[in-house]
Length: 225
Image (tube, rainbow, N blue to C red; front, side, top):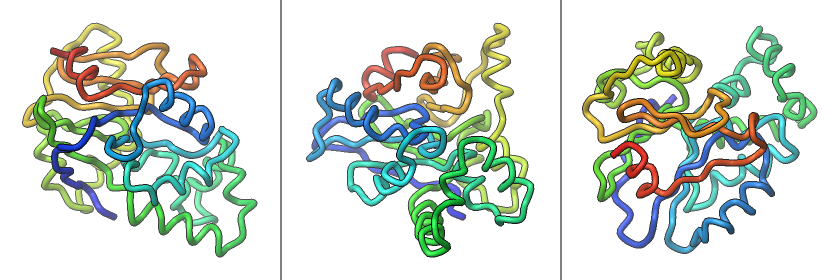
């Protein structure tokens, strides 16, 4: 498992960020068209959970082969990677993952390899607005802890994939700063609108609104500036 990947600045086009896609391939393309996304020079960063529930999880996973598409690992990708006899696999079946178990063993192996090859736990993306951190759920209060972590830090990795604690604290009025990064972007929480901490954004609006949130780096920066 790759924990973290640094992404250099995009000198040719814009960077965009999308909330949990959950298999909604056609909706994603329609939303990108509305944003005038340029497939030749722009980049799209997913906060994870690109699969399950929607009509075309396989097409969404195959986006990982595209040079303009990047995704961190979400808890749904983590469930897909679980052993078929495990409790996590059972949960996956009941959380929109039944499509995966209808695939052949060969197809399943190819999809697992795509995730393992392309989806680390976190990205740090350089931009003209400063470093932007992306992980699916919680961020460590010191982002550098994640940048230099390894697979032995199971509690940190579980938080990054599964926890809604920070989001719930923000909803209750508690505000705090994520250090060592300009701001961070997350999914996972089924929010009705973009929700912010001092320098965190949660953009997972699909399940509540049936709309995908796509923000440019500039738009995300303006939200928390």
